Structure formats: structure tokens, C-alpha cells
Image (tube, rainbow, N blue to C red; front, side, top):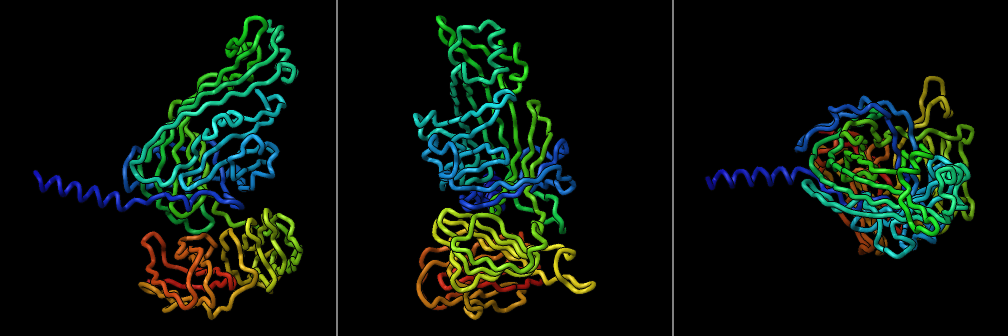
Length: 486
């Protein structure tokens, strides 16, 4: 009997070792652009498997109905930042609606958001989990780190937002007057939210990709949320009265917001990517409907007429700069700016280029359509994909001899050596041929001068192929190709 217990515990321990851990390195940072696609009403019951381990989820047959990019900005540029002094990230959609977050080592917390309608009528509302600062720790956890298989937790949150009756949209105000609320001076919306989280499965997930889909190791986070939203009116001389049912009767569009709602999600998380791999939305009956998934499609060449620009602005205005061939820059990315370079063949950062502390800069060589790039008949331009992680970039490019890989091609392992002329910060990472970061090998704020050598063994989850090893130091940015063959 004892040997059976030991055998079970050993087997169970091996299972736990096989699963991944989601750490704070996967949380969004300033300047990150998370790319997602939505497949509406394409989810199937086969996608919502029971809890378990070593499972496989295949989303590769989904068709994207919509694709969007979520950019994380500095909150000080938001219209309602004064309501969320503790927030350090913000997003804004095409309609101008804002979401304020606090990201820390323990996760990503939604502090509040804005909407530009009430029951479908034009109206600006700020939903604030901090209750105008009275609950400074208020918020709803969107991600908690670290996260492991079998983790579970719960959370409660509440909202209370009030308005003067005279400020309401005319259609809503007239509906309440018709309902007999003629002595109302103010109204309020209150919500209570209870959320339950459980990491109840792990395995691999495959999503649509322009190349051969590669399974991502994932944890599945099952989320169930109960939300009750009520409407109150302050009626003179009666005081506060619950008018939820009255609202739904006299203004039926409010039924989509008011009342009790149960929703669920199955969220698939990888330990290297900042995007969720996939998210299935479930209705109150547990039936799957929509799937949001990481958009694997490479960005296009937005400006095919912009072939070989030189961008030397001081400072470079925030924005995306795309060219079908090359981009060359000796400009300055100022504190608080977000700049991205996209080129079909090469990005060159000349001496004098600098991205200041507090800025966000990203450069990528992308697969530009041959029809948009200058090439000979029947020829395609040479593509050298790579991605520079967001952060403070050095002021000049480095010397290729400072980074060496041997042997190359790699069979079982490789030695990656680099040399620092002076002590300072170091970032060393490996990206795949499409610029996706696969591993961070070194990330430190201080390393001594001299030659440093790391031994790299390809992880089981990475398939053989072409990779890019990138080194970023005070001396510059160096990138070299590495080929892994079995």
C-alpha cells in the first residue's frame, strides 16, 4: 500500500513538473501592442473539455471576423486619469473609451473604465472600482501571477456611480418622467461582481497561423463571473428607491445592462507570450459562443510608397512608421513617446539614435508582400525577420564581433558568447523566424565587463528551424542568425 502511495505521489509530481508557470514577465508593459482576432459564433462544445492534464485544444480552423490591436499607453494621457491616481497603464479603443490598469509583480488589475453611452444613448460614464479613491486597492483582477496548475481563487468587487437627473440623456429622462418619477433629482447605478477563477487544465493549444500552426504549451484558466446591476432614483421626499424593474419596463434597452448576469470564460495562457493564446466566451448556460485568439498574421506594409525613408526627427513623433524596404534612423524617441518601425528588409539604427528612459520603441523586419517591394522579375526580397523588445534602446548599433554562437548550425546545444567593453545592463533573447520572442536568456541591470558565455539547449517545446539571437547593451544592439537542426 505504501509503495502505491509513493508511486502515485511520484507520478503526480511529474505531472506538475510538466506544466508551465505563468509569471509576471507575460504581463503587458508600456508600449506593448497585443494583437487579437475574434471568431464570432464559431466556438464548439469540443473546445470546452473537462478538467485534466496533457490535453489538446485545436482552434486552427477558426476564421477571423475581426482583428484589433490593443496598445498599452501611459495613463497620464487619458482624459479621466485624475480618477485613477494609482494606475500605471491605460488602453483606449477607437471610440475613445478608456480602461485604466495597475500592473505589478502580482498581476494586472483593472481599476476602472469609461463608456460613452448609457443604455445605448450618448452619455459619458466613468466606472470606478476605487470609488473615487475611497477604495484605493479596489479593482478587478484580469491576470494574477504567478499562476500554476490547480491554482484557484475568488474575488468580489463593486461599483457605484451617480448622476444628476438633469444630466441624463433626454430619451432616458423622458422615460422616467413617463413612469411617474417627476420629483427625482439624481440617479445611480450600482453593481456587485463575484468572480471565481480555477486553473483546471493544461496541455497545448493551436491557433490559426499563416504558417504551419505550432502548438503552444498552455494553462487553462476557467472563470465564472456573477454580476448584478441595479438602478436607483433619489425621489423627493421618499429618498432612494430601486427602479431597476421600472427602468426595464419603460426603457427596454436598459435590460441589456440591468439585472443579474452570469458569464464564463476559458482562457488559455502561455508562459512566453503576453497575449492570451485564446479565450472562449460562455453564456449563462455554459454554451460556447465567441473565441478571441492571438493574431499570428504578420503586419502588412502600411505605406508601400514609402520605400527607404530616413527618420532623423528630434524628437520622433509617436506613431507607427512602415516601409516596404528599409528604415534608417538617427533620431530621438523622447520620454513618454511610443514609436514602432516596420520594414520589409532592414531597420538601421545609426549612431546618434536613442530611445530615452520612459519611452517605448520597437523595430521589426516583417514579411512584406513582394508586390509592394522593389524586386526583380520572379524575385522576392530577402526577409530577415526580427523583433526588438520594448524598452530603453542604446544610442548606437553594436559590433557584430561582440556576439558569437558556436557551433552554428546547432545540433544538441550551443555556446552563446558576448563581450562587454564596460559594465552595464544586458538583455539577451532568442526569437523565431517571425520575430516572436521565445526565450529571454539574460536580463539584468548590471553585468561586469569582459566575455560572458551561456550554454543554450533547445527546449522541447521549440521545433528546429531558423532563429535570431539578439543582444542589447549600452554599446548597441547586435543580432545574429542561428540555425538548429537535429
